[in-house]
Image 1 (spheres, rainbow, N blue to C red):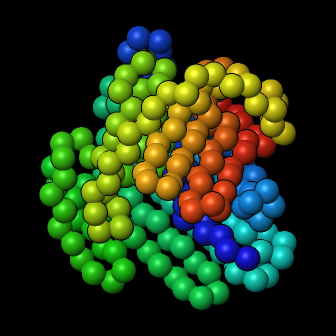
Image 2 (tube, one colour):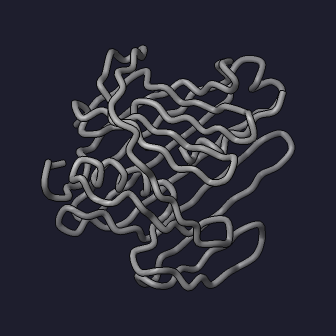
Length: 227
């Protein structure tokens, strides 16, 4: 069975001004081509002038026996006013076949240092470049504030650009409840990432779907608690 948990990484306010999301804890089911293969826990916390956003994804059942996949993603940095600014990012993917780690340190708005696949890299980045996990929180903020949904992220040895377009509203039934969502999508060739965010949860992510060459990986909300 073909599937990949890192793709889930793409996988995640006030009405007129940007506001950092409230602290929260959330859980999601992880489905690949309609089959539940694992779960993901996500949490955003604050400590004084700093933030930590962490996601832990694990295969379960037969998928855990076959692959042992565990994905641990973490973004941390400063909270300056109502904006979150990244300082460090890490992604560790463990399985029975490999143990890969990606680490990024943001030294300035236009420069980052990365350790990826055993190599150390210096990245010149567009001003305001962030990490893939923080992009989810920025998406929540910017959708609430009706701002452009374009982001530069540093990871896997490169700077990537993601632009989301709005697809309107859609109501979803989930194990956590029924939510009216704003639906947005990023398209890159044959790859599509679609995200549903609920205004009543502070634009928290209710569902994310990644379609890569016909394989559909989906996370769906099972629990959400704001603090």
